[in-house]
Length: 150
Image 1 (cartoon, one colour):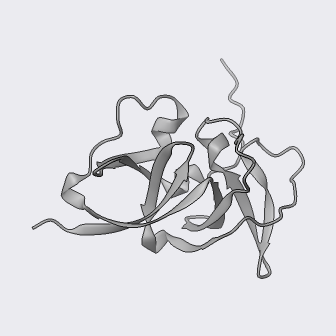
Image 2: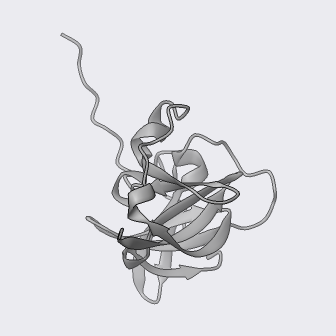
């Protein structure tokens, strides 16, 4: 008998993503943010969550999907990461899905570029592919140091 995992799901664009439920602190509606001058494009700003300042990462930008043209405010998935709490801005909140760990597959070969480094793998659901997001990699916001060529 295979073990199961519970994933909190959300949509970014037309794709369904999930992270382990135990990594999610909470899910909240759109919050006003303070812009951060000279921040990378994926950093949407800082938000105040009951006195705690969190960085808000735009997953659309992080995944290379471009800006949201829907005009609907994003939702916040507050995630526990190795560096502390981070808010991931997503298009729409899903639900909690229980998956069979034995059905976990490697990332699809169709994923290219930076998106491939953000996805741990996938589960085939009845009507959709559930991509498992690497929360630590997705919440990385620091600009890599410039590497000088020899």
